[in-house]
Picture 1: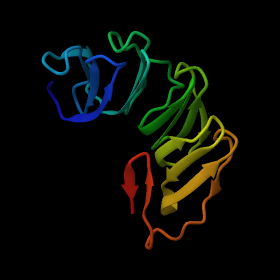
Picture 2: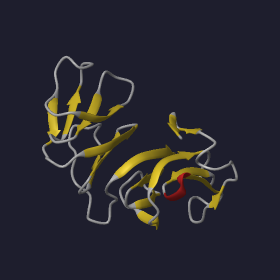
Picture 3: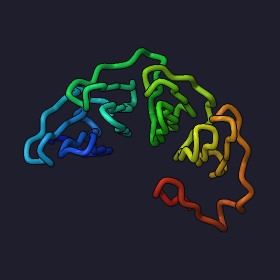
Length: 173
């Protein structure tokens, strides 16, 4: 692999992994890292990779790429797909994603996307298809949605100066 690795995801239950780099696209290994093959040659940063089943989503600064064959190929989605995604969460066919472009939802395994908000997000965690937690940037707020991300309500857990919370394994002060 050439380039700094930004994101990694395991694909299925095999020794297949995919990694996104800051300046040299996406790479895949089928043997636990002994040999790597470049599957997406772009110079834009790949900020986040999500894998579920044989589907791999790679979110770059300029586009979204989706594989349905376990990362063997990684074609670009159309220009309505989200960019600058920093985190995502999957439940059944629903994918929620957040980043610098806002909050997005896909109901078809990441094939098509609906932008739900333009608020910059840091992290997302789906508790069910309807209950979703977000960490959003202005004001470092944690918000909750009980309608699948259509609307959100700030959670009353203090101010950004006197608490820390944990969402999906990341700690935000």
